[in-house]
Length: 437
Ligand code: 5AD
Ligand code: SF4
Image 1 (cartoon, rainbow, N blue to C red):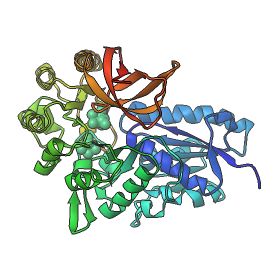
Image 2: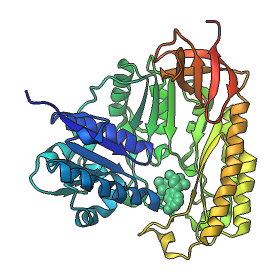
Image 3: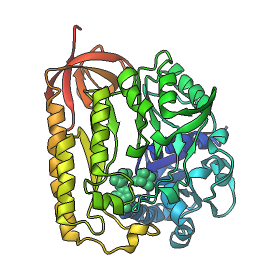
Image 4: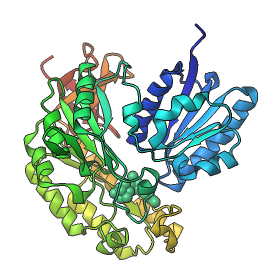
């Protein structure tokens, strides 16, 4: 048999892309590809791209510039572009970058194996009628104790700044019975922590026993799988947090006390201009209701500063909301005009103003993140060991609250859930020792 062909994959952007990259690796495995971390060794380079902000898109073209040189030395190197930039600008990529052999949009990954064998340059950015997941190979690879599972893709919300409804298409939920099979299969192969993924995951409604299941129903059923200790889901829209999902945070122990619930802005005027369809007060009420169900829950959020028309007063309202909620983590971005979205038609906020606001919001959320970590010091928490740490005798994993924890535990094993006591907090993680070991 000939040597296996080597595949180098670079993933940009969100967790959905991380998941998709894994699936593409598996699909190309059927054609004899194995992954490599050394780009110079690769027979094929696959860039799984992100289009959410301009900066993310630009990275593709600078990476393609570098690949051009590599291909001069290795003319038989295949270069593929996948993901949301492929979807949005596929034809332009082929025109601008002769180095690219193959362009594949997120809904066509199951066609990759035939595409790599095609002669000449190929592009597929259709939204096919068939479900790509029905055509992707079953997962065989051995894996760690955590996994992503895509349950829903696309979004119908059309926030005025966002490309997702265009690049990922309309909301589609995968059938619940299929997801239960995949979840059981993951657990059988050692997974103890599953994160359910979707661009608008809490809008999930997929066919299951007895009719359509909501996300809450799916979580409740998955929580019954023996050996599955932890369930999380991301990303959610505030308007899709239904009563049963809120209740699940109180009565499903496997559902972890951490929720990413983006609000984007604290100003009603800006929320309206963003087409978010809720007010700041409604968001705060929702936070209260979830906290009533699960008092120790930590929230995280996304914020956009410098959205067109954002005044100083609007920005102050965002800071006020952040102070009121006290987030465990948050991600803030400077508004980036995306071609084809309604907000891109409007006059932008001055760059210097947006930059200053970004710094201010980041300082505030960093302080809150720090406070949430500091509050853990001295407490007992549960950690799922994901890998060995850099120091001898150290294990690394996540707590229920999604804090990274370094545990001094020479007898620790990957996949173990261990009660530990937190001894200190450093910049981005906690240090801990096992309880009673
Ligand atoms: N500009 C800046 N940030 C954006 N996001 C989405 N679109 C844009 C944009 N055009 C942010 C939102 C979203 C996160 C994934 O990225 O905050 O929640
Ligand atoms: Fe984009 Fe999220 Fe709004 Fe959907 S809900 S349009 S994915 S920001």
